[in-house]
Length: 193
Image: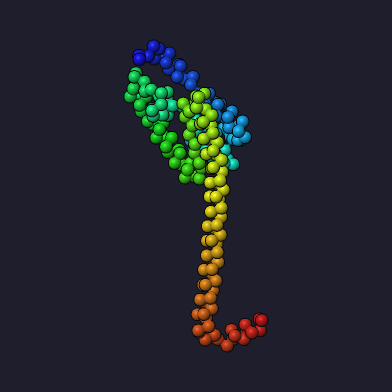
């Protein structure tokens, strides 16, 4: 279908599309809040500025628009026929950036959830939010178990270091006991006891 707007009209229309506080984001925030979750919005200290950050659960949530992020096999994602090269490049760049941001967050130890705009339609909302709630709560247990494993590894390494130091001291004592200790040193050690 051909575009009914002029280039200037389309440009003005597209410039009013927000990147924060969108309708889908507000729906997710309302649902999560009603389920007892507390979060921060648009946390700039994390890569990609996630839409919602649940620190207690070590989870970053992105609410993606199907058109802007190229949700495959979605009725809301229809590639425009006019200026197709521009839109294809834009959507592909968004996808690459999303993948890079998710990989970076996961490397930092964060769990990442992506909620698509089409999953928030009235007939799918309850199912989607139940899945999201389950994943977020599971992330809490994963986060705690990761911390516990790290603590155990640290304690194990510390114990190994301590054992290694004891072994070194024992080796040095054995090495010294095989050598003849000068009479002056023996006399000094007897007097210090």
